[in-house]
Amino acid sequence: MQAQMLAPAAVLVAWSLVMLFWMAFTRLPALSKAGGLGSAKPGGRGQDLEGVIDDRINWKAHNYAHLMEQPTIFYAAAVIVAMMGAAAGDVLAAWIYVALRVIHSLYQATINVVKVRFLIFTLSNFAMLYLAWRAVALTVFADPGLAPS
View 1 (tube, rainbow, N blue to C red):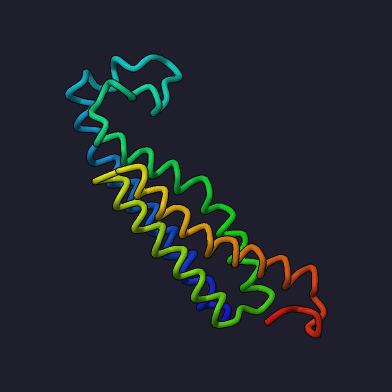
View 2: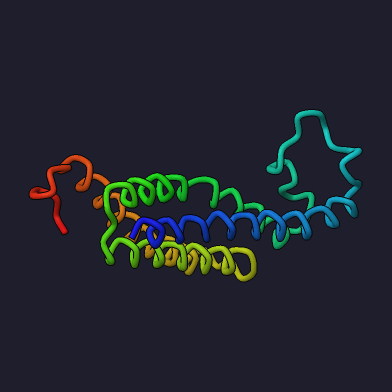
């Protein structure tokens, strides 16, 4: 069950790279139209492009940043659960989390109504809470007789 538990994490890594390339392939042409990198101030950051290029283009960058934030605890939980012995429910929760993060990405990068995006994010947090609980339960209660199944 170890590989099955790690597969959703691997897919989310790959999805994060998809978002990186989507961001680059939309942002770089827009940046070029706005004067290119030659006019960028030293030490400039992506946030400096707010109000410079179209918001719809920046949405991809916002989502990529989101994929570098909360999913980091998902990766840790997935590895912990995989190492300690994942159950079928753990694998299902991991796939639910990843599916909702992909849906969240697609929604944020295209439509981006915050009320709906927040709902998708909130739903993914239920799967994350379950995985966090399982990681704690499997380690704190490492005695197989004490761990909830």
